[in-house]
Each structure stands twice: as C-alpha cells, then as structure tokens.
Length: 290
Image 1 (cartoon, helix red, strand yellow):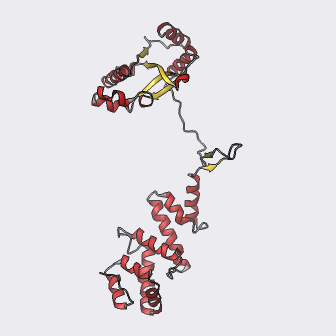
Image 2 (tube, rainbow, N blue to C red):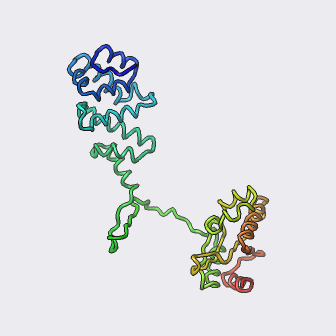
Image 3 (cartoon, rainbow, N blue to C red):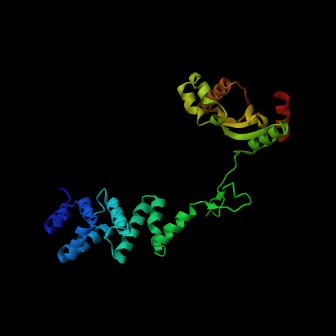
C-alpha cells in the first residue's frame, strides 16, 4: 500500500488496520497531513489511544521485528526540529524508558545510555547512566597532558581477582634462577609462541595440528635480549608428571618441533622426585647453557 499524499481518514484507518506502521509514521513526517490528523477529533483519538500509546507501551508491537525501529522513529520525530509531531511529556518519558530498556536488555549499554540521559532523574535511566559511566575511562591529569593523553578505568571491584603468572612455586623459583643466571638479559614467563616466533616463516613446514597448536601454546620461560628489541635467546620448559599423559606428550612434541623450526633449542627441565631449589636451578642453568 502506498503512503497517502493527502489526508484521508479512511485511508489512514486502513493503514492502521493493516498494521502498516512504517507508512503511518511516514504520514507524521508530513506536517500538513499531521496537522489535519490532529484537527480531526476521531483520527486524533485513534492515534492517541490505539497507535501511539500501544506502540510506546509495547502491547501490540513487541512481537513486530521492527518495533524498536518504530520507537526510534517516534523519538527522532519528536526531537528533530522541522517536524510538527510532538508527544506529550508523559508519552515522551515512557518512550525514552522503553527505548532505554530495550537496548539495556539487549546488552547494548551505549545505545541505552543515549536514550536514558534524556531522563537523568528517572530511577531506571539513572541506573543505566551510572552503569555506562562506570564502563568509560576518565581523563587523568598529569604534567605532560599537552602532548600525551592518559585515561584510567573506573569503578573497579573492591576484591582483587587477579592471579599469578606462575602455576607453582617451582616455576617461580626457576624464573628467579633464570634472572640471576642471565643478568644481561630479561626473562618473560608464560609467553605465547605467536608473540615471539614468525608463523608466516614456518607455517609451510607445520602440520595442520601444529598450526592450530601454535596459536594456543605458551612457553614457560623465555630469555630475551633487550638490546635486540627483545629477541628470544633461550627457551625453557619446566616439566612434571602432568606431562606424562598421551595428550601432553603429543603437545610437547609439537612444541619441540615448532621451536626447532624457529631455529632454537628448547630446554626441558624435570625433577627426579625432589623439590628443586633456586640455587640448584641456577647451578643447572650455568652448567648446561652457554
């Protein structure tokens, strides 16, 4: 059905009866037709009681796939200069809350905030505004602000949920021993293979399983030369009984091959049954790594 180009009550009612909401909304964009609708007491009542209120309350429109779009059209008509269409204060507030709710429930907080800020004192809109602001970084004042921009997040939890990089005390002692053994270098724990090995250079030599493994694998400790833009020098793995499963044996073989293809050795260290001290680790490293 085409949008009517002049006011015709019967045609208007047909659009409403056929639920051609887009076409009805288009009528409101024509200031001349909108004025005639408002001046017609019967048409005006139908629009107020059947169309506008039902749309805003969502009783008849919530099942429509485009109902949020229709709500947005109402909002834009009300807010855009040049259109005579205006909702009364109560309906506009309901429309704002409806839109904010729709986007909030869809986990689209930014859009919910854009509508909620129209009603900052409304209890729900206030909640949306506060939650949105908690997700936004704030500017930090500092002495170099003329040429460096610095922000910080806000609203952090009172409980620290971070964890250590090290899975065991043995890993930590080994890390300390490496730092002591290589004072001219830096040591990074649990570093991703993909951050220190050129995948493009070796991918043609890898099997499909190895390619997939490459992007989810870590190295326990890597010694890097900071004077060479942190280029890796030595690779170390600290093994345990957890490396005895068939799956882990397969993973270890893939990691060994990847390091080999990258042009390096991978040193694997495993205790023969006792806890290794930091001193023992240091002696071992100095005895075996040139």
